[in-house]
Length: 76
Image 1 (cartoon, rainbow, N blue to C red):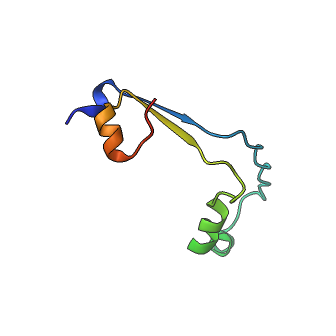
Image 2: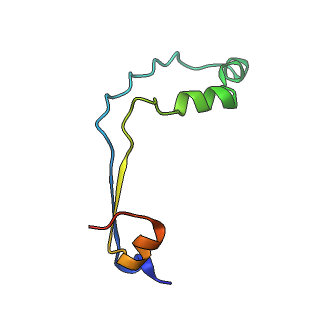
Image 3: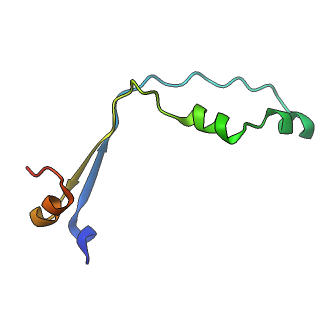
């Protein structure tokens, strides 16, 4: 099925404030770098979006109406 040949995808992200600059300490030793590494839980918490942020909007252009109805997508 060659559905993506003539389709266009538009992703709109809500406006956010830029992150604060990261203060670099300089050159760290191997032991300091190992101590500084984050656990997976800390990484996921750091990378998670805040629950108050808006969800991104994704628009698909060129999707056949029957296929969009099958997927439960709203059609224009």
